[in-house]
Length: 231
Image (cartoon, rainbow, N blue to C red):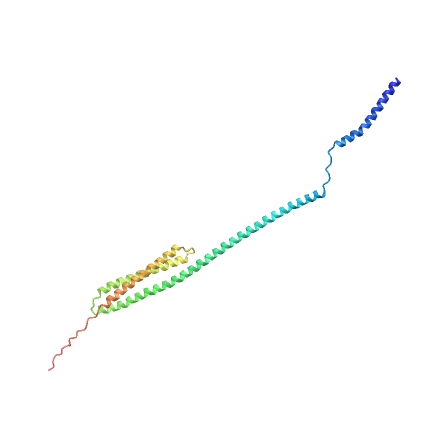
């Protein structure tokens, strides 16, 4: 029985020694089974990472700067276009005003000349009428001249009416802020009609003058008066 106890004790001690010797090995085995930690980065890797970060930041700055420059250029182009449009509009307005001023001046000169021509024709008819009155008082038949005088006066009146219409049309066209080519063209058409009317009136006055010049006062009798003899 003593031997059995000793054997049991020996076996227990051996088991304890085995267990105590296996623990460090188990610990070493567990430590070896864990994932190894990352090795420290080298200077070259750090430099590459820093360079990559700097490059990305620089690209972002360049992109931002490029976008800002493009926007600035776009704004300058828009401003320039607006200035050109404004300058062009102002230039057109100046040209239009200058053209209207020239047209106004031309109309004034032509109206004065046409009015002077009509007035001259009217005064000429008045002098011819005075001549006709003298002939009529002397017994000359002036009926043909009277008819032609009526025609001449009618044509002079027509010319005056057309001239007045042309002046009114021009005044209306020039007074309108948006003077159109059609209104100016219409006014010029009336002025051209006035020109033809003045020419027609002039021909009628000349015809009247020629007719009156053909009229002659009756000649006085050349037979000497007889006197009765005195006693």
